[in-house]
Image (cartoon, rainbow, N blue to C red; front, side, top):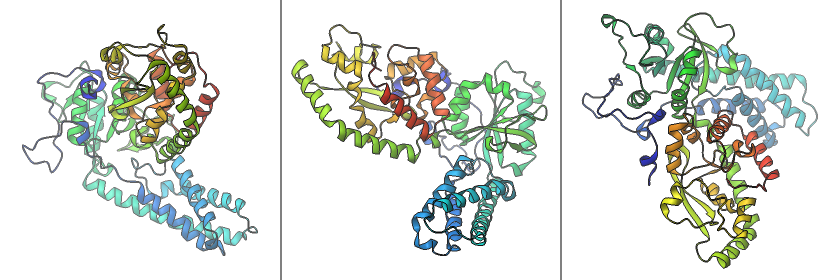
Length: 488
């Protein structure tokens, strides 16, 4: 069984047989040329944040050259660069969905440069730097960072002027048309609307005033328009639309789209500050709802934590694995390892590994029976493995291989993924991140035969607020609660 045969269409909506969607054809697409029909064919062309990273590293290096003796202490230079990069990343200064002016972000950049130099100076084993040297180093660092970032942003603005980002406008048709018209009259915004996503019951202009953009009324149509036009920007008109279209917006965010909320009716004095991406787009107040979903979720730091910890734990618990294998072989015969297909990141299937604690009557039962944790025919040793979660230890190999992560939503079988996706709108959004051995839902007691709706809510909350520190906290709490009365 494959993921394609079990996973529902986007937003959990049935496919309309034979229905076609009229969307704008991207510039440069030859007439009659076939359009891509699947998510995997969509080519992301979002601006890379690597040039900004290079600028910040160069600023740290040139600033360090001003300090006498600093080149002889490369560790301090590395520490300075990492500190500034970490502070800039925390402040969303590498978010390429926004192209600010150099003066707009200069205070934030300079402030973090000063904090980085103060931190490194406090840790330096040398005598305190003279104030003139420290000020000169900070000034050089700020100058290089400001000029470099200005050059990068200027290049991005020129590129967007000639090739603006295609966007979908989500909201009532009249308000969405106002936004689309304003963007078309303001090419400097760098955004080109290609379609309007609205409810079928929304008021539509009279036939004589037919909108110039296609109006998409289902998640299937929106998904197709996204693929055909390479959409990476979604403009949400008003908070009411954000609530009404929450399920669809989660799907679009999971596909890597940047979501902006626009206020088209009145000035929004309560919008958050710069950290939340506040500003304006063609004069409309805007707020950043999601900075492009998928890229941040499986960061290098998270993968490094998985590899180091899973590899170390595999070596540490290898005697336990050998003992469990030997006892299971002696009690239940061959077939110690249980293999089963589960759905992981982006809906891709993988094979999960466990110690076999129960022998299903058939492959169909294994794929469709919800839980066998209380089966009376299990031996006491198998019940012990379930109760203590020792049967899950083999999943450390799944983590080491990259199929799973230490922390993330628990993976489920294709049969139940299809079932739960139809019942719970937010369930497919769980697959934005690698599946995990433990997660936020598990440490809150949501294991075994517990509410799927609650699990879904906790899993999506974990993904939306992901941080490496949160992973560490969940792992610590999992270690403290390792012996549990039920399996997962």
